Image (cartoon, rainbow, N blue to C red; front, side, top):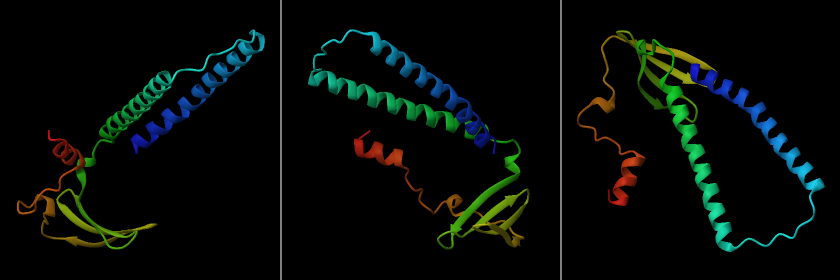
Length: 153
């Protein structure tokens, strides 16, 4: 919840600042063009165009990486006290319905989640271990491990 409000606050404050900067640059360019003597501009070379495109791509990738790092940091600094309620396991029952096993303190609750409703299905007396914690189940490789293996690292 705190990460959403922080992200919304950043977007809300960054929007007007970016708009002001863009309008300032556009008005400065328009005023400079109105009084400038017409000049003949030579066509840029193909190497310059490729270099410009690569630099733009690097800039976009750096912005995406910075945004991902910021979101990861904001998500880590979530609200305190979430250790009391944990999602132990979940399974999809339909296109938009799922059953979720929650651990609330020492109790385990099986909850049905559907669009617009959450219902308690039952309270489990004995502790259920999730399938990921069983030693017999092989761990699913994530994308980073698969990519490293395909690159030979």
